[in-house]
Image (cartoon, rainbow, N blue to C red):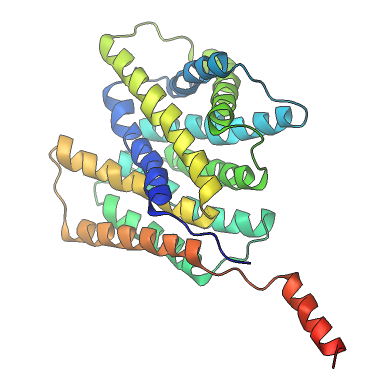
Length: 305
C-alpha cells in the first residue's frame, strides 16, 4: 500500500497549535486573574465550546457521548487544569520542560493502543526534544515546585493519551463539531470543581477580559481545531514532536517581551529542539512495515512451486 503524501502545509498548520499554547504562560501570569487556575482553565474552554455548539447545532450520538466525555476531559478539562496549575506555580520554562516528555509518552501510547511499533526516528526525536528543552529553559535560577512539576508531567500524560485516542477513534463529524464538543465538555467538567475549590473570581479587569478573549478564541478554539486536524493528517509521533514548539515559543516570548537574553547553552537547546522537530516529521514519511497481505502473497507463491 502506498504511503499517503504529507503536505508541508499540514505540518505548518499543526505547528501553530503548540505555538499558540506557548503563549499561555505569559498570558496566565500577566493578563489573567491570580490564584484561580482551575476556573481560568474552565472559562478558557467552556464559553467558546458552547458558542460553537449553538452554531453547529449538533450533539454526540450513541457511543460518542462517553467517548467525548473522556476525550474532552483528557484533552481539555484535566489537561488545561494541570497546565494552569503548572503555569501559576512554576516559571514557564520549568513547566515547559516537564511537559516536554509528552512526545515520548505519545510514542509509548501509540505502541500500546494503536499497535504502532515506534521507529528509531521517533524515539530519537522524543529524547532529543526533551534534552533540548531542558537546555533551553532550565538554569541555576529555576524555581522547582513539587506540585507544579507533578502537574506539568500529569498534564503531558493526559494530553498524550488524549492525542492517541483521537487517532484511535476516528471522528464521526466535521472538525468544527468535534472541537466544539470537546471544548464544551472539558470546560463543563472543570467548572463545578473550580467553583468549589477556588470560589468565583471577584474582580475582572479589562486586561483580564482581553486575556480570556485571546485564550478562548486563539489559544483554545483555533489551536485545538488545528491540533485535531493535524492528528487526522499526520502520524501521532510526528504531531507530538510539534508540541515542542510550545516551550520554544514560551522562551522566545521571554526574550522579546521580557528582555531576557540567551546563553550559549540555551542556543544549543534551541538548535536541538528544532532538529528534533525536523526528525519527528520524518516519521511521517517512514514506510509502513509489511502487512499481512504481503505474507499471504508469499505463501501463495510458495504453494505454487
